[in-house]
Each structure stands twice: as structure tokens, then as C-alpha cells.
Amino acid sequence: MSDLLEDPDRIAALENCIRKTASKPSEFLGYIEAGIHDPLVAVAVSPFIFSGGNQRFGCPGAGAYYAGNSFSVAISETLHHYALFLRKTPGVKRNELRCYCFVNRVNCDLVRILSGAVLNIEGHGDASADEVLDPDCYTISQTLAADLRARGESGVVYPSVRQKGGECVAIFRIDGVEAPHDWSRLLYDWEGDAFSSVWHCDASFNKIKIFKYL
Image 1 (cartoon, one colour):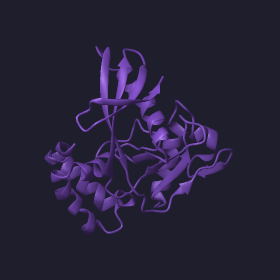
Image 2 (cartoon, rainbow, N blue to C red; image 1 turned 135 degrees about the horizontal axis):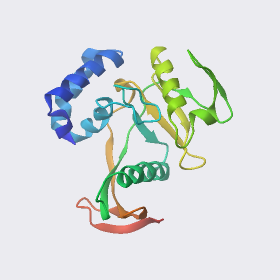
Image 3 (cartoon, rainbow, N blue to C red; image 1 turned 60 degrees about the vertical axis):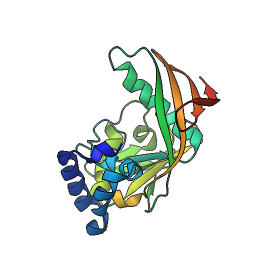
Image 4 (spheres, rainbow, N blue to C red; image 1 turned 135 degrees about the vertical axis):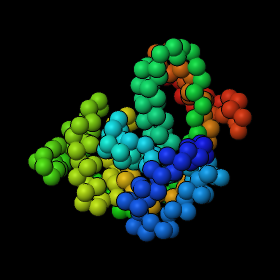
């Protein structure tokens, strides 16, 4: 993943992101140099380089860092989004998708979105949490994210849409999350229209034991 930070245009985009979102930009500009040599730093900073137009709490030109509060929540969320991506990718039939699981710490205060709550969004009015957490439409959640960013908020914590009882975070500021620790490697078995299983793997992505049959 370190190649994400070898492209001059992406480096420039990240520098701009840091200046806009970090509370102390000079401290975090060092992430760029570190990220070129350390893939784990690249994991933390790369989500802020890309447009967030297709993300629940993204905005045009502003991505976010997403994580779940447990291993199983992270699996459920990524299974859903990887499946959407693969179904839209021509010619992808049976395949094994290599995935990494990272663990890291959130370093900022977050706005909590509670089920059943009503939120007031500047320029939009009231919106229910159900609208913000719509499984398929991100229009209201992106409007809320833009409003929260304008207020200087660092991110949100919200109920997982893909696993009942789980929670997720979306971090807006690059200094809101630490560089992660490499915790686990996984293989997702893709059957052409859906995933069939998730496997724990060794460092070379050899299957060790099944995590879940789907």
C-alpha cells in the first residue's frame, strides 16, 4: 500500500488534506515521508486522499477512515462493500480476495448517532437516524457529514448497518486516528455473485482455518 504515497499528485492531495484537517499540520506532514516507507502508515493516511463521493460519510474531495468496534463487525461491513464493488467489475468470476485486518486507536471526540434520534442538519433541517443509516442511499448521511465537517467535528460513531449490535466509526481528521497495527490476514472466497467463506490465513495468505461460511 505504500505505493499510494509515491504518486506526486496523491502526495500533494494528502498535504492539502493535512493542512485542512489536522489540528497541528506540521506534526502530521511527517506522515507523508513515513508513509512512503511504512505501509501501515499508508493505511492510516490513504483514505484521506481519495474522494468520498461513494462513502456513507464522505464528501466530494473528502474521504474518511472507517473502522468497526470488533473483528466480526469489520468483516460484515467489508463483505458488503467488496461484494458491491466486485459485482460492478466486469469479468470477475471465482476469485480469492486478500484482505488485511488492522487494529488502531481513535484519538478524537466523536459525534454519536443513536438509533431513533433526530438530527438537525444545517441547510437541510431535521433528519432521522434511520435516514442517515439508510442501507443503500448515502444522500442524507453525506449531507450530515458535510455539516459536521463545517462545524469542525472530527468524526462520528454510529450503529453498524451490516451487523446488528455492532458499531462503526468514520474519522474526518487525519490526526483523529493512529497508524494501525497489522493484526490478521484473511481470504474472502468470491463465487462470481457473492462471497462463500472467509478464512484466517498465515503471512503468505495460506488458509489456516475457516472463520465463517456464508
